[in-house]
Length: 352
Ligand SMILES: Cc1cc2nc3c(=O)[nH]c(=O)nc-3n(C[C@H](O)[C@H](O)[C@H](O)COP(=O)(O)OP(=O)(O)OC[C@H]3O[C@@H](n4cnc5c(N)ncnc54)[C@H](O)[C@@H]3O)c2cc1C
Image (cartoon, rainbow, N blue to C red; front, top):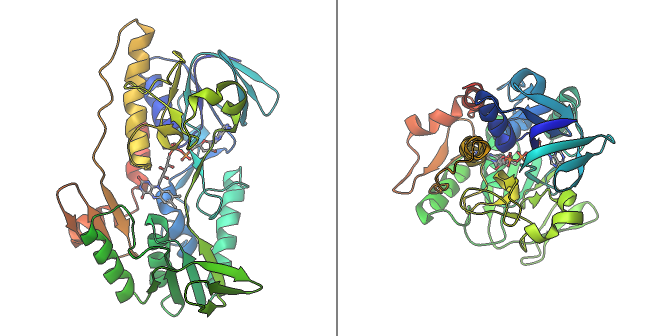
């Protein structure tokens, strides 16, 4: 197989690059192990209350991509070709590394097993059915995902006793203090018990906090403690492009340092922005312009990093918005995301 631009990974970054390149008449080939795109923002609600978005967060690549799609994994990247897990080799003029990240502690967030849309639907239904019967729930990790998950469960299952346990003394590490306090207030009002400075460890069926000796026997437990980069296919030939966190190092135009026909964006890349889907999508839009210009021997302006912004739901009706200049829980703002968790906005971006 031969292509102008090979795109490794069909997340927010890869799909947005592919769509914008095709718009400019550049032929793309996107490779992903799954046969579907998923708006991760909606996954936690899909587990807590699947009726709400009714599976709208997932679509087949073949229904959204203009260019070529191959369902397989990239096993090994070389200078001008990639060896796929299905045995095929794809040769390319340029490659976009958009293989993102995985969530080993919380496999429901990004599936490592469900490679077809039907299998993912079954998998999420199973997660929901397991949660449905739970009367005590422990969520470990008070970052964005843990806060959101605790809030979604407390909203959808008001009778369940939900505990959110965090290792430090504030939720949402790295956010402004006001946002941290507002998230705590909203979760507490929703009935979530928030515990700080904890370190729960499993002993048989019981979870014991080694700091306080408190024990919990939850019916359902979720550990939300962060992601790892998907970089295995780079290790053999391009280990030198990875930094000490395993992220691909890129320059001002998101080209990989030292490899002139390689680019990297999204969660896999050390772009210097937060690891967020909407930023991965913006990087993809920008990168398509860089690549299009490069094909005609021109350069494009450097990527302008965006300030950190986030809208964290704490249930289906509440949430905290952090802009560079303010923090708010104002309903009209929160509802912009609550409507459908940006599912339609994401797919609209891909079809522009
Ligand atoms: C539960 C949850 C909620 C979130 N909520 C928000 C939110 O509200 N707003 C927000 O902006 N961000 C949110 N994020 C973060 C957001 O999901 C990530 O920043 C985003 O997914 C990164 O996009 P990406 O395209 O870089 O990578 P990914 O989405 O990780 O996609 C990478 C793709 O590459 C594929 N892949 C990996 N390795 C290979 C290989 N070797 N060969 C072929 N394909 C491969 C994977 O199958 C995957 O499809 C959330 C994340 C989680 C887990």
